[in-house]
Amino acid sequence: MGTVSTLAQITVLLAAIVITASITYHLTRLRAAARYRAAVAAALHTAHHDDLTGLANRAGLHAALAVAGRPVAVILVNLDGTRTFVARFGDRAFDQLLVLTAGRLRHAAQAAGGQVFRLRRDEFVAVIDDRADAAGLAARLVAAVAEPTGIHLTGPPVAVTVTACAGVASVTPHQEVARRLALVHVDRALRAAKQTGRGHTTVFHPATMPGAIDGGPVR
Image 1: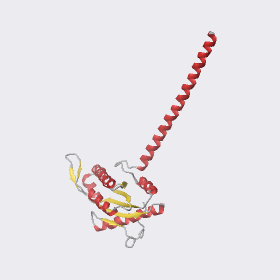
Image 2 (image 1 turned 30 degrees about the vertical axis):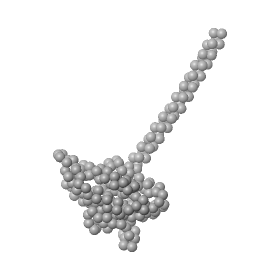
Image 3 (image 1 turned 90 degrees about the vertical axis):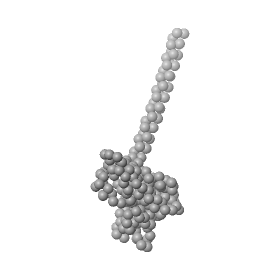
Image 4 (image 1 turned 120 degrees about the horizontal axis):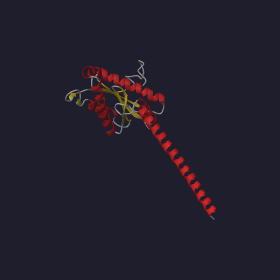
């Protein structure tokens, strides 16, 4: 009887070891899968977002346009006089300005149901449903940029005011060619606004601003 009891105990112990090992193995696989998913998500976020402002970047813009289910309006916002600002206050102050500007643009765009992206150092893009008042939102974005901003340098905050111009164009983003052409159109509209003067907005019109007549950049 003692031998049978011992064998039973050994059998139970071995079964417990096997079960524990199996559970540990599966838990380890689950944790590894979770870490992998988290790493992939973090990599995708990094690839589609701007480090300085936290806004989605150029890749994020193209991804958003690619999945848009209906026509949208694209608003290109470019700050005025950035070289003069940097020459006077420096790059660190300009980074502060960009972060504050990004927050203002995000707030204004989200209030209208849109999104904001940062294309390059002093250029942002807002995307909104084409049925909305895109020209009105462009004017609000430009006004938001022009609000006085407190920049922290070595001493007390310095109040600065920066203006911006905006171009507006519509796109039916079902094909990549259409999306890229729309960015050419909005760039043309922005150039027209810049030629008018600081703080202006212009809506793209095919009759007066043909798409890529002078080889405008495809972003």
